[in-house]
Length: 247
Image (cartoon, rainbow, N blue to C red):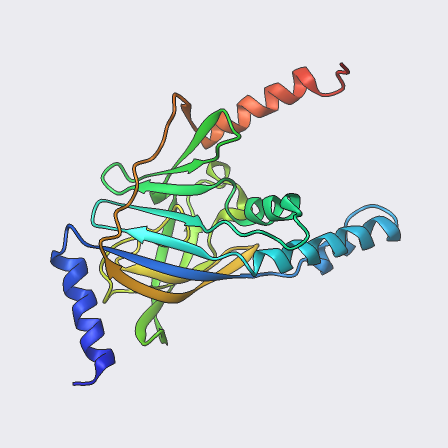
């Protein structure tokens, strides 16, 4: 038995029996280039060129940010490691994160089948049902980090229940890693997701570790929890009342 086979067996038993154990998967973000879509927007050539240059800068920053999932048998969290840009442009980092995550982290409670988008600068926590996305599991397979994964295609049951750019198109999940989770609020597949694509980005696993990785409790800090529809309605109303006002 080679080392890779032994590692997979250990991973399997950790996920199956090790309630005190957790798994941490690190991902690289591979952003999609939307230059062709930007060119179709209304506006003059200079405006479009500025948008394309901004898209390029945001994508460059995004590709440097390490993302990760920590999972156990009851819950999982998807978040990222802070980075410091050499030019100190925190705005670019914020734009890159918001492009693919819409906040600081996603916390999923498997018992209630609910996902929560959390951000320190927002007055609410946005809640979605991770069953809003249905998965069709295919027979197509490949290997990521020596682990066999299968392709699943997604459909969303209610397009009004989530921002379109955050809804996954497809995922590659590992039944051998039997915990649920991935870089999405919709990790309901029977195995950890090691690769996931959305309209904005592809996340691909770069490392898998097992150990005492405890999934942190979701910090509510007195914030109200709203469904996506309630969240959107609140900001629609806020915009109606505040747009055009001057101090």
